[in-house]
Image (cartoon, rainbow, N blue to C red; front, side, top):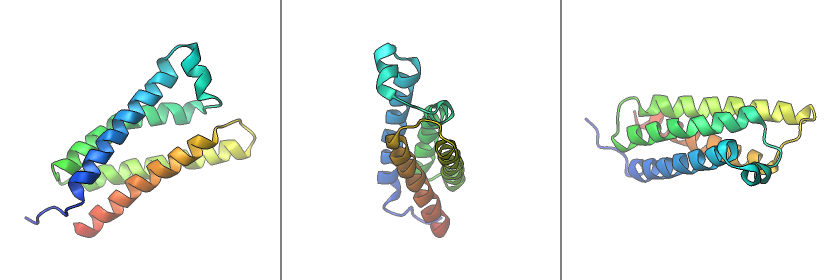
Length: 126
């Protein structure tokens, strides 16, 4: 059995933190009061719900990374590729004229890049 690369645990901790923040922000936007919903602006509901639910999967992925479980690379690919697909939907929705928030584009870029970088790195170490 190979030892885990040194970046695995810090990435797992970052993924867990990211997951908790995603759950908190998405939960606040979805279930918060009128002020919280107004602060969200022009959120695209599909993207908002996806990100909220994905936060829980981030925690699962963080656990798999931290424990160096054999399926950690699979969950990283699932998260990264599904986020990329929802990001593509956001782009299409924006291009057809649906109002959206630019900060969502930034967040989706970060989420997609983070998980695909982990997935690619894990695939190279396998």
